[in-house]
Length: 502
Image 1 (tube, helix red, strand yellow):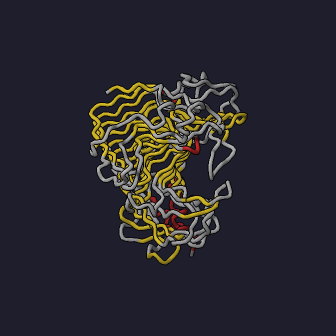
Image 2 (image 1 turned 90 degrees about the vertical axis):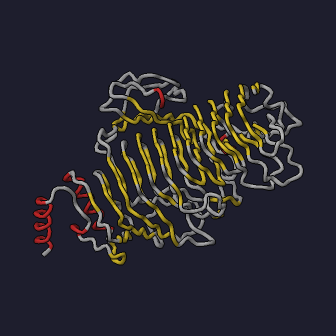
Image 3 (image 1 turned 180 degrees about the vertical axis):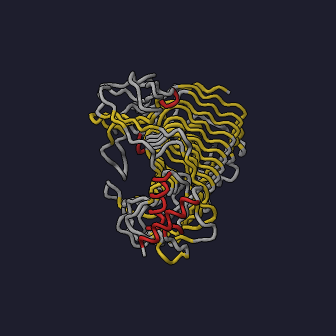
């Protein structure tokens, strides 16, 4: 019977070549039967034949198959179909549910002994326009400090290069590589792959609160992908414990990604024991990016309240370049290890705010930030930013009303830790048409906002400066609603190298 079914199936598909469906491979879609094996087989067949996949609008597909992954290499229209991802009793929690793969395999690049910051060409031809990853395993960077301390990671980054080896200037190297131990090119598919629609509900895991990160969603390893109209919901999170998630939509070693009109859900914050042996807050991301270039999120929202501190936050990344968000309402933008160039326009950020370390230009425009600071440079990576900040037509509303001190730009670095690189602060800062809504602050000791925090330095002992802290701050039409003056910093000695122009 099975052989007859397969013959009939292939005959049916041959007569209807526009797309394939999950039902053709045995999916039931009643929310009770496990449809994951059928979904995996559907995409395998679709990839082999180069056909798109279309889900049934009225169905609910249960995905319970532990250890399975559906590989996507053709367009998918999930429509209004629902998918329930059951993570309650998992064994293989590092296995993504959907893996979006490129059509070409990566290529090892040999013979390139070194690479310089800002280099314009690799000097060799590539199989196609590619995302290139470079590694020097003889040096460590981002040596993390604090409760989640570690010994750092091999010096690494990614950039985009054309087929003739020309490096695209916007993603040019930010480090010098005296020795290149590995360089790999990931060819960029020329045709856009589109993933459309779908309502996905994660039944949250019930595991202990340890750093056993769950990779249970879409892992996008293909460049030139468009994700539109997708919704991700979360149900069944426990109050006391749960393992964290890396993100429902994860972009890994890919370039030119657009995520538009999508809805996501923040996860609850739990407590665990960090690497230093002390309690630390631990949370999940619903959006993630790692070693990626040119990612844009637009018209995206989250279902949970962006001001509710019981939920961790939405977005986190590592080793990325050219990240942009437009018309997004998220609780958190967080770029951990070395982002280059961030553009945030027409956005609203909640209690976790805007956090990062890295290089290039931060453009925050036509946006509102509702956190305890406007921009935070992560202290666990040295609170370093090698570049400029532009804030234009924005509103800053402190999340906590009990603050006795308020600073626009904060970080911490006491000069006692080696992060693997020289830490810097922005050379140029433009604050134009900025409204600081501090009218609700209630502490009588509050004397007015500062541009910079103290950055963890004892203001009475200014002798040790861990930064190259000098530059220019330009203020154009900055309004403080409390009527109190805007100062430079309580740590005047540290920031004496800045010229303030009003």
